[in-house]
Amino acid sequence: MKFNFFGLFRPQPADKPQITNNPWAQIITLFVQKCQPPPILEHFLCFQDRMKLLSRLDKELIGRKFMTTLSLHNTLARAKQLFVPLDPKNIRIYLCGPTVYDRAHLGNARNVIMFDVLFRVLRRLYGEAHVTYVRNFTDIDDKINAKASETGRSIAQITQETTAWYLQDMADLGTLDPTHMPRATAYVPQMIQMIENLINAEHAYAADGHVLFAVDSYADYGRLSGRTIDDMLAGARVEVAPYKRNPMDFVLWKPSSGDQPGWQSPWGFGRPGWHIECSAMSLDLLGESFDIHGGGNDLTFPHHENEIAQSCCAHPKSQFAQVWLHNEMLQVDGKKMSKSLGNFFTVRDLIEQGFAGEVIRFVFLSTHYGKPMDWTKERAQDAEKTLRKWRKLTAGVAAAKTVPACVLDPLCDDLNTAGAIAGLHSLLAQEDLSGLKAGAQMLGLLEPSMGAWAQAVDLSQFETLLEATRAQAMQDKDFAELDRLKLALQNAGVEVRMSKTGIELLAGPGFDPKRLDTLL
Image 1 (spheres, rainbow, N blue to C red):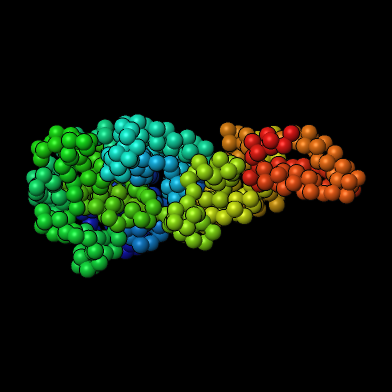
Image 2: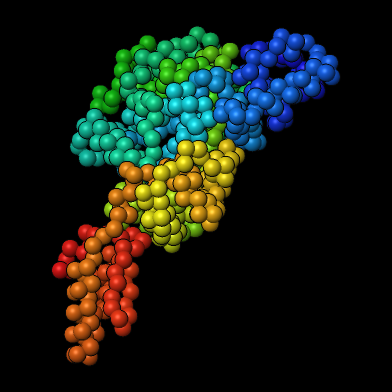
């Protein structure tokens, strides 16, 4: 039985930790985990003992790096909660990674940047050696099979090429490598074992070469998404396969034909369903229970709901992930990104258009992950101007050894990156350049490896060309060629400043030196 402190705790089984929104209860829980208070806490505390505990808590909170508190919005609880790790020396987080059949689009990048910030914050609070981050690659999927059939290339060629593209794109966005990046194809034996466990526990059944999870065998199904099975059935518009006992039952294993990838299993030659892949990989790398699971909010249902069901049923004493983080979707110019609207961009598209990865990252960080994010060219240009200014001012300045509170505190408040950027602006106003650099690097900005795009560019030969063209235009009273040259420079991202005393050219937002090659 857990202790009772000011009535904040209730008796509860040790294997079923309470989810509470009471901040004092969470702080005391964190204190108990970290500070190993005396055994008297197992009993009712008299008033004097309570005061001693509070005094000790105050001392522990002062100057203890790991006692900086982190709050996160937990989709499962529908509330922002103090993060209390299962084991402060072994923080474990999992992000659903990409299905590797094509280039990563902007929406794919948002949850990666969100989790990259989370990874950085956790490493800052608990130490780099105490945080394990897993982001998988789904390399078994019908979309991959379709791409192989369409292009005539092998599945291995497609997944290897696409994986390399993805890793390069994420590196260009300044994200840290996760601790583990497993491929689903390497964990098929573990998936088969988990499916067998579910069948033995009567949570799954084999039918017509398939294995399906019996949704009605798990009483908490729908808890994450807030949906009831009746609601799901009422909203379903898909044809129900005849081998399903319940229309909501989902596939754990399905048969493969001769031209499809597959593995031998107790149910015949086939391949795993999508949902079981993440459950098996997280189990193998993080254990039955871990701290944080995340992804885009489009994964809340059915993917994450199904992960919870199969994982908790396969391991009844586990809680799977205790915190669920979901980011909102991305828009382009106020509209949903789609190919039909002509506003669909991959990360590589923007980089090839001249937007640096650091600039793209800054735009993403400017909006809280829990709000819809709008990508516009104007926002990207503003971000580029800001970063050029910061890089120029902090060149040669050593970053402060500690991250300023005006940056770290917002980040510890549900990863409020927009608030952290506001803190960076305040540091600039205070002329605290070392603090600005430290705070920016906490966000993955102003890193030396990310700054090649902002280095000074020698445009003197184009200034000479433009000056000569202007002189000729003045003489001929014909400004068509001058206007053409100015427009070409501006299209390459060059700011053109012309006055009676001379011409100045500066690399501006979206500067692309490749577009200048044809002008000389």
